Image (tube, rainbow, N blue to C red; front, side):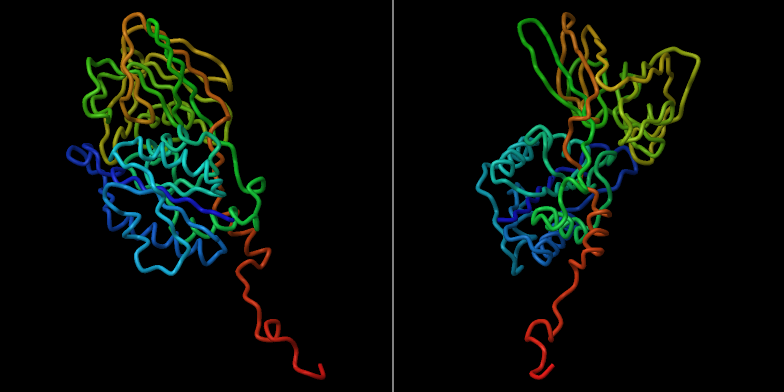
Length: 339
């Protein structure tokens, strides 16, 4: 069956940065509306099965309520943490979902990639720093997902392999593999605390796979020094501290700070760099792992991330193939007798 999956992160767009910056709050009502439009459009465009991931705020259930569509809420435990997104992506992979819509920010997209590395993904921005996802209306996202899931438009035509930052942490007897999709930051602080990185003076290094001047968040540092497009191979390494260059960057929406830069270096596809010593690693803007004094972190940028679905191209091909047409009355009932 042609199946579309939808994940909505109820926590995206609601973190502590809204208390200290002008970052926009993305309400539950807004998210429910996006999911509701995606469901209707996916059913309209031929999806035979639409799977929704459950969540603590019951956004999926609220979005599906009263809609005449082949919707199912999958039976998965809910913790209220980021692991719900990882588990849902893994479940959709097992369910052979043809296209996955995820509502959230950079962190949500990363969690999808952890659960399903090759996900055919439409990432809809509802987070704080939305570098990886983009602003897409739910109606367009749902229609594009259905056309890909049904095979009316093939994933080979409209899916583009995204980049990811592959991270290996060797710390004592422990080795851990992890990934980021946009940026990896090395933070000088003693504990993780609130996951968002808010103090610019604690930043030591940033590795960015996507770094455009329009970015907000940690990748904006690299984006205003050495831009790297999402479709361009490789990335950039920025070392921070005393240096001859200073740059103004928006580490959060509407909040600027001056960063002192000691080194800017482009990174080729697959090139490995090693950073040693005590630090906290922030993946796509969120502090997540602690490394000890003896720790060693190896990083490289690969084109091995999720397959991002180009929604505009999908709908353009659908129009060219007349997938939006309906049969005329003559075609449905046959030509009148004698013609």
